[in-house]
Structure formats: C-alpha cells, structure tokens
Image (cartoon, rainbow, N blue to C red; front, side, top):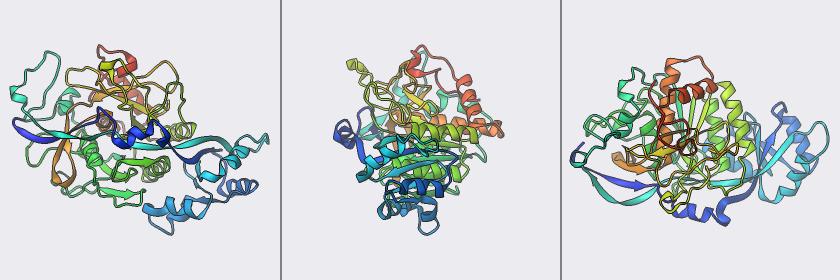
Length: 429
C-alpha cells in the first residue's frame, strides 16, 4: 500500500498516566480476594459478617441496573462486591485489616483464601506525530514482510491469507477502551458492546477499536488491504478502560465475567500494569484464568511495553499477563526482531513470555472511521486472539487448554531467546 498517510501512535513508551503507575499510582486502595470455588453466596456473606463486612453480590446488581454502573453501585452501597462466577471479591479501602483476618483464619471452613492489592491497569499505547508510510520505496530485508496492497505485514508474517478459516461463529471478547462501531469496516457486523467504567462503550481513545480490528476486522473498505485475522468471528467488546486509557482490576474482572457469561471462547486483554522485579503474579487472576481454561475459554494478555532494550533495560512481564494460565504475548517487528519496548520473561513461574506476534507499525481501524499505525504488545495480543479463533473454528469442541497447546505447537520458531519471544511467532493453522 503506497503513499497512505495514517496517524502513527507508538506504545514504545507508556502513557503519562502509566508513568504515575511506577510510583504511588499503582494501586487503588481496595483489595482483591480469592474465594473458595465451592462456596455459595450466602456462606460468603455470612463469613464476611463475622468481621462486620457487608458484601454485595454483583449478580443482584446486574438484575436491577445496567452493566455500566453495576460494579460501582455495588461498591458504593456495600463494603465489597462478590463476582460469584469468578469466585473473586473486591473489598473497599477501609477494610483491609478485616479481610486479613478472614484470609488468615485457621478454621477448616475458610472461604476467604487470599488477599491482593487491586491495581490500576492501562492501555499500552499513546499518540505520536503524523507519519507517511511508503512501503514501495522501502527495501525489503531477506527475512521480513512489509505492508502491500493486499495486506498488512502482520497478516503476511502470520500466513493468514493462506488459511481457509475465518473464525466463523467463534466469540472473541476484547477488553479495552470500547469500540467505534460506526467504522465503515464494521458495517453489517453484529457487535455487542458494554461498559463497566461509567462511560459509554463508544471508543473515544481508538485503542480498543484498533485491537478489535486486528483480531476480527477484515479488509479496509477505503483502501482494500486486509488487516484483520478472524473476520467472521463474533465481536464482544467490554469497555474496561476509561476514555483516558486507565482502568482498575474490578473493571477487568467484571469484563471477564461478562465474557464468560456471554460464552466467549477468547478473551483478549491489551492492557497491563507494570510490576517490579521479584513481584509475583496475582492468584485471583490465575484462579480465574485456570477455571476459564477448563471451561473452554482462553485468556490472552499483552506482556507489556516497559522495556528500553536499546538502553539495556528489560522489564518483567506485566500484570495480568504474568499469570501462568494467561497466554502472554510479546511483540516483534517486520524483521522478526523483538520490539525495543517489549517486556521479557524469566525462569520464575508466572513471568514467562509464551508466544510473540507482530507488534510494530501495525495498521488497523480506529475511531471516527479512520486508521492508525500503532506499536505495542497491545497490537500483538489481538493477532494471537484472532489466531485462537481460527483454531477454534477448526477444532470447535476442544478446551481452552487445548487451543493454547495448538497455538504453541503451530508457532514458527525465531532466532530469539524464549524469554523474549516464547516459542516463536504465532502462525496460521
């Protein structure tokens, strides 16, 4: 595709809000609590009352109000809220000590199993200047792909054009900044969108629309090139990040629960929260992801954009991608080199990069019917989500764990460390 001018946005550096995250802005003040997965709602509420905690059940609020305000309303009217399907609770700030007493009780019928500080999470992209990409004038390296009139380089590199599968009938959930459903490329598509952040599901930022386009868009109506992996997948979009690209764990958990209730096979999360060296993964997210895998849903998340590899700085995989049961995705460029910003894994359980995907200079649709060029592990993640949908179309009756294994088995090895690229680049079945 020659002489097309798009807005280029780079995730090579975190947004201004994410810079705060490295300091005091990492945690909300609330607690996440892992609950016994056999406990019934009434038992959870009774146990909480023993330390004077009044817990609400999100299910009750869903029946009386819209998803957009259900979580915030529950947290406002009670000391905490229980996500009954996930068996995770969120407890408001003044009650940390009460939660601690519940999670450290020695009784054999302990229901509150673990306590973790709720985090802020962020979209992993920011605006940069205007730029014109002229691929016909660029020299094509021996082992790389470039955008052309047929498809973006990422579509070529992952061999999508050679696949007979389109993700038909597979439900993909995009947890992000919402979606601009008015884009011409989504015309005729039935897209279900909800919000959990107190704002309209409409995508003011553009990040969520871009990710949805990579996962399940198709061909640009205005320019004719293909940029989406699974064009016949069914899109379910949960707005869990506000218009400024910032969210909270409780928004994300609400989005996951909604996606599971909506029978989505794939949950794509191009969001993250930076962690420090030595920090471990959250058992709350790990529990949710592990249960989802068994029930037939795969959670996929961005490894993070905090590294500055050219300066010798490689940061650990972000929350929640650092959970062992969430498929963690790093980013490579069109020469199959790990992106400068892409976070790296280690041998420590829960800090692995599982697989990589195109994540530098990725073209997709965005707000107001336009297109963006974005870079980030945010862009790599929906490539893997779309590929999972293709596999689920091919193998409709398998578990999430089976799709994970097929993604890994089908990846093409790269001349990169596994800590940077996992098993290699995702590749079409």
